[in-house]
Length: 337
Image 1: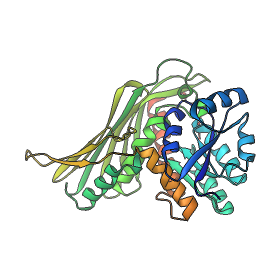
Image 2: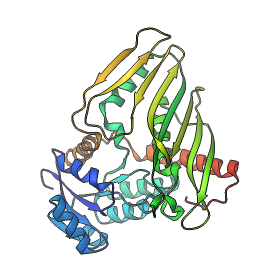
Image 3: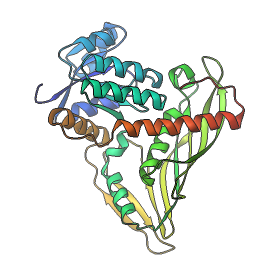
Image 4: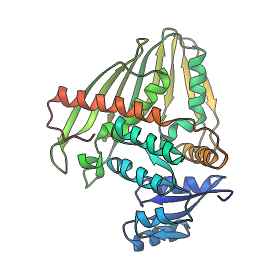
């Protein structure tokens, strides 16, 4: 293997406008190939972004000896299929969240990764910003006392066009698009797995039949009695925050899921006392940091910070919330798992 991890990208999805430049900024990786459903489209995109190799199919990219690892930004419901195909082709995988639409899918990926000896990471890039290391440090020191409530919001407006988020067959809907961040962050902050969930969704007609949630309010209850309350939506004004409340104060983080390069702040509040501002230096955005972490793991054998059991646990919580939301709303939803 070369001194740098040679990345290939499966598709020219919109998210790659941010993620390909980030991978190109990594110190230990380089983007050498991109695939689309036509070679013409792939070549146009490759020329625009300075990528040397363009492939007219995903299979062609996976067959290339020039590629060590693939980044998968495909629609949610296609992740499992193409992760397995990538592993079978001998490629390490960084895949956009959620890794799969079910815990069983994540467990299948874990078995395949173990069988092939290849690395797989679920792409929750926000976890690699140093502000979350700082947040975990503050929680470990119990600066807010016993953890009681965590409030999280992650919403934006996807518009009314022909968007993959309106297709159940592609794994669309608010829960698996933006809500997965809320669930993942809630599990990270509490350091536990929920033993009870509740959810209420607002639905619209899906583009491929049935109904799909455009927004959802969820609750996760944890064994030590901490409760995560979140709301998420893809038809709402943009909102993005995380607040942790304990018996002795609260911590507030604005824009926790944004792709930041600038400095950020964690606010620490204690019953009317002067606010403490923890300033966290920016620099590299967290997708660059995640790409470097993954490449280091592949090139040097360092352990991945997050394993596939974590991905399965997140998927399990999402499935439970999805079932609860459908049951409480009475919506005629199409199965996605």
